Image (cartoon, rainbow, N blue to C red; front, side):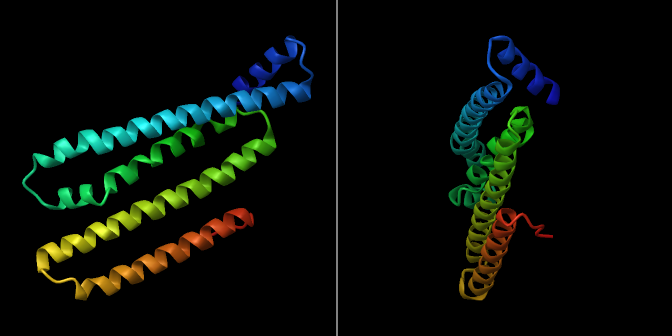
Length: 168
């Protein structure tokens, strides 16, 4: 990645840009390309999870996959893919400060997506329990407690990222 980053800056310098401007232009263009690709991957993955997976889930005899589909568990999982793309390609950006900002934001993005995904899983588990046992009272309190813990840990993790401290 570093080699590609240096080559693109060098090409811009050959076109007459100073080193500082070459880094700025390369960073902006590369960041825009990465964001566009991440957006496309998010749309494609969400489309697949919302259109194709229901057709597969509809052909099974079990109820748990239908409940997971109703609670958008698979669609929430699809949001990890654009983050993985950005995480794997942000090192191409020449600006160190922009790379640090992207790393901070992508860490926050993963925590938010993980919280949303686990929230959907907890909702699905609650519905499964109601479907199996026929009552919601016994597990509802535990699901709510798990959500409070999940959101609290997520908030602490996000604050620690922006405070530049380790969460673990």
